[in-house]
Length: 162
Image 1 (cartoon, rainbow, N blue to C red):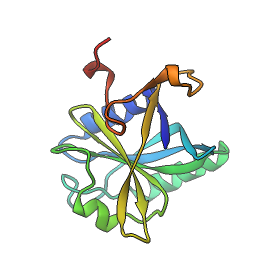
Image 2: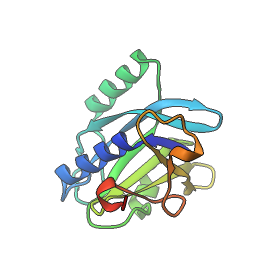
Image 3: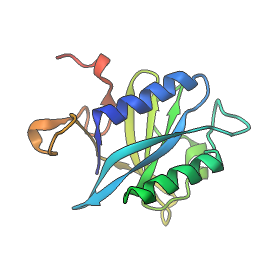
């Protein structure tokens, strides 16, 4: 399961909107506790793919910068995020062909404000769904603070009814 504060999800969605029609990408960092990845920071990175409308490649210098900061702050890389500006939040064939961090969370967001989390299973050569739990700022990850859509897909705040 990946637990992410709403503020960080909003940051990923805003990054996706700013980069459209190209794919946005970045690093998700935090800590692992009790079988959960708990996101504490996201690092926006530049997409240096030769075809940025349909795939992403994190700029190497941005990745190094993010990894250095993650280490300095005593966190670990939980995974990566990217956007699908023209589609849904399922991993594409390109995403599967290019995934390389076994056990990493891959969060995909779109311009409709949806988000889904996936775990890369290197042995099986495919993504598996990962539960994505969006929590309010300062939440203690208790049930009363959880906001889930269909168990995996999340909607940004402007799409929710209060």
